[in-house]
Image (tube, rainbow, N blue to C red; front, side):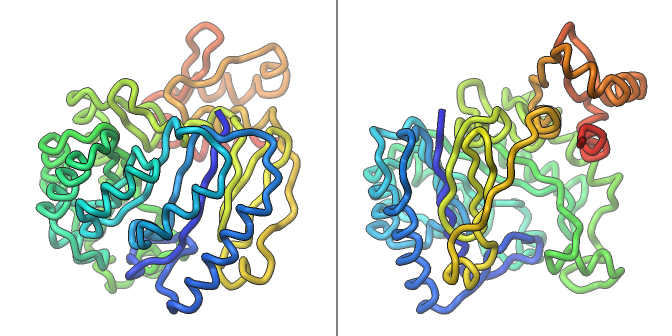
Length: 358
């Protein structure tokens, strides 16, 4: 099932936890970006008709609905099997949601991150739990029947009690899909960099420890499973039949093409990435690609899925040592020819993945 990703890296504000190539830019730059984006899509030589669409960012829900609709209109396809739009809480009105549905959007991913006001304010966001509840009701009223809610474990000020409260809101709102991300502590976000420096800005000194964050994640896995929202990928949970068809292709080696700044593409043989920043993208929209090493990517990507990967004879020849070591250490488990991460292995997945790089 080939797909399309469209990047709109423009936001109303830059969140403290964000390490993406998105941010607040002048309106003039946004207009130039949209012209370049349309040109890139229009110039693409299509080898297949895509079936899924994902418009991410940034905050593409801030776009005027007519402008938003003009982007997928450039892509040759029948009705989308799945068309996802990322949206910021508080940016949704019924008229806008109706326009999204009419343009083919049938799935919306809400960047909630937390339902706790002090945690939300610490990220720089302005929504409330009630805002999210109203947005979910608006989307359902517009006939958009597949909703994802993003949460982050490890935010500044987060406690076991506050995390439970956020998960209580998930139970109340009953979204079809939930994404649970562990805060990435690196120098590419203001909060992550401040934590690394041992500082106090952005609430860094009140961020939970790595061990506590792992406990929060594991509690979410258990709680969501009790709600019928099962983990199918390290960070993604869904009710049966509501898994993200678009995102699954990243882990199952299906083809996809990305348009816009920092967008990635894969044709089954090569991977390539557009320039990361808006300014670089406007100068030159495409970078050269690199051949795919299928042997290592089978594990590096496929093990993210709860279903795991199927082992072939050639896999044993290349990777017998790490497979045996990690199964003995309880990070991987074998079920016939199927190899998957254990619950403990999920928390140490990066350590596991590195051993499958040739």
